Image (tube, rainbow over all chains, first blue to last red; front, side, top):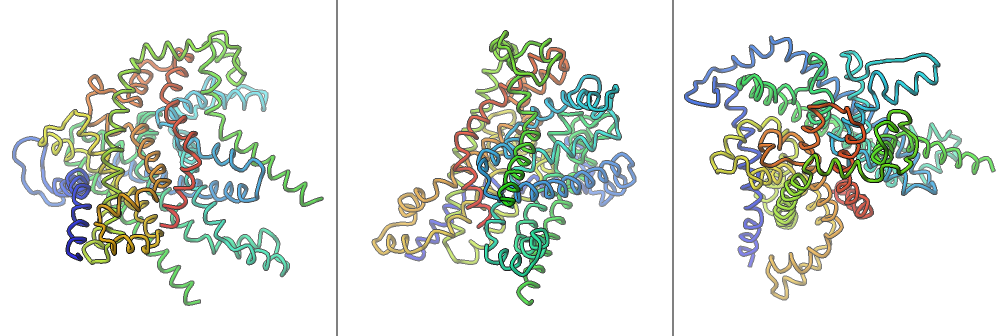
Length: 294
Length: 276
């Protein structure tokens, strides 16, 4: 009987394990392996150690892209969480329109990236975009800020659009976390004379800490992988100024046929995602242990 | 009295906030029913219905949207058929069998969530070629299945752990097999989470641009996202009414699906992801 259950269990896991191995784990391991060779996609190749990494880390275009990607990831995660927590607190106030508002805040996450990129490109157009028209009207002078077409603004436009798109799931995580905070704790703090703001920071915030870890992690790992939005919005331009690591990999591989660089950049991206995750998991473990000890 | 006034203020503030967040969608909704001149002159005004649905029908014809819809839907159906059932089975095994190999496999599945697929792209092309699956719908669907399953397994097993074991143990006593127990007892209980997983997988495939860009020839298999990107990326948005028509075609199916299932969706997401 026990043996039969064991075999059925293995049989249950087998199909998806094979798909995952062939189409996810195998190619990622091959990326790592090929990044240490001079493979060009065809013919023989030899092992060249870390030569690809040595040259990619001295490549200024790549280094700029790496820094930019980290900046986009960190800023997006930060603002997504601030906005998400703020909105979740608002929605937690038993509003009449709570359900419909929750749907409205979630909807941007449902939209295809191309659609988001096109609509925002239209709204942020330098000449007759909605934003510049509104600003011109409010300040009663002509404003033509190139939100998408200038290297200094485009990063912030991408961050704003990503926050707008990624807020939905984060809000849901925070609403669930807020609902887990026992009512009597908040009341006790208020009775003892703490202001609602103080009670939020000293009672609610520590209780929802696990939710914060999860959402910051989601925000960071999505922010660092970002491809579709900048690709459809600007194609990485103007002059590489909105290029992310994922777009860089795509370009190395399919535009400049530089597979060695593409593989090294791929591995660096994977490593970044893994390091960030482990950092957060370790931090949350530590926090939980600390809380138990206290 | 003051407390009630404060509550209304919060409500109005939140509604205004939601309205600002909804501007892009509002623009799509109204401007897909307006002529180019109307959009340029008054982008935020409600439509006069002078053009009716002609923007959408024009975009429908010009973008060859039937082909795009059928391409994307075929991929979605293959992914959901494969991904949902296989993830459920695997999740059942790892959440119910308390043996070391199964616990290890749980973490192996989970680690799949971390893999950024853009890093696996180039070897993936060669792997698909080896299996003669390059530039095929089945090929890309298998890759999508590999991408979305780890999270599905995480959500399913998280939810299954909250189901009391007594039900199954009674069934085992009666001599029911693992397969039988799964289909008779577990499957009906996990319906709400299944709805969530289906919506998430649908949205991922419908919205994704990277995989079709790299793995499919856009002439043979134009997905909706790629069709929209290619159509307006090249010529820019000279005709805004056509642009908004095209956008609403890419948007409608996924919005309709989400709105009709959103009740289950939010519940399932909370139950699966947060408790799990």
